[in-house]
Length: 313
Image 1 (spheres, rainbow, N blue to C red):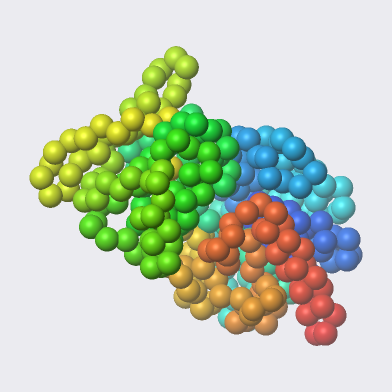
Image 2: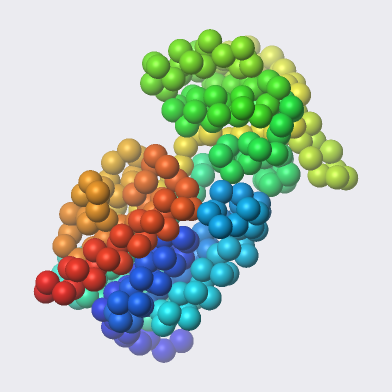
């Protein structure tokens, strides 16, 4: 393919709720934004089927919601490009991005909205039952396990928060952790240990997700004692993997300050990063809320921050 150079006032990298919302606002501000979708157009919501916490939709399919956002961004005048950025230079202006297609994109301002991915155990059986009893998001999927038994794996704040949250629905929650102590905050641990619905299985790792073929569904997990090798099968209808998230910050890891395991640092109450003219929104910066609606809110903030910054230049 021919290598070309494209310049825009605002380049948005990423196509989840943060990226598309930024595109809607930037387009309405006549900034003629260019949005580069990346490897997973629509982001994490395209692997979440049922969404029941997007305001205005009692019930919506994740992929459908993302298609609507893309259509909206285009209707407002944003240019949406199916390409992914392989290199980004934020050291001089205009900022320069190189893409997989061979195109070079330059921009006066950049909005980073590359998101994050849940970390998984990497088991074939886990992959097989994803969306059919295996989940990485308690707030998304807990509702489907009313009166059922659930297993959560992990030992940090996320795992403890998810286990506690899931007690709202489940008859029993078993938290499996490979160590003999948790990394979570002490106050959270106290709540966990006191909860009548929660059982802990220490010094164990999950080696396999067990389930049925037709219909596809989880019936339990196989856990191995890391000290003795003894195997325990724990029955459950839902298996929640809560071993953390990995923000997609590879493009900027040597250029912007990161914290909490790779999240881009922004000025509190804004989307401004350490480099003037570079803004970050959504799960790339947010290790705390990680919701579609908060990401969209930050996308709006990033576009408004970029608009103000460009007006001052």
